[in-house]
Length: 142
Image 1 (cartoon, rainbow, N blue to C red):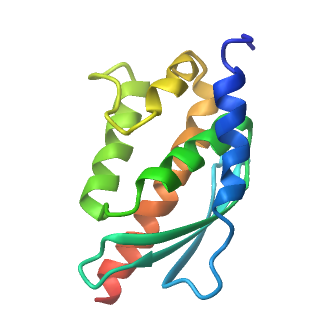
Image 2: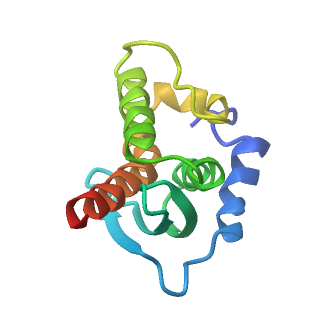
């Protein structure tokens, strides 16, 4: 792997997941695993009545790229709802497939080097997959 893939910014983001410990009594908790690489995440979300994220907690077992992606999700998910997070997830997946522009999610440009490493895509998408699953669960329960 290229040294540029695991650079100081990525490693800094990876350790930032510690800033988002699991929530005591979250409105929504999901556990998701990436089948290709085995990365796993337990994601806790608190939401407002309209579905907007108000709090997020993480337990991430993934490579530094998956952890960095989780930190970016956690930093910028508050105030976002299912539509916005699903749109970001779909834009990331399309970009990984070589379709469209880089995703507009704040800070995602730091993960640009990972585009050339398909084996890492699942770990990077995992936090967004988990958030979509949690928010869909919320929408189904409403």
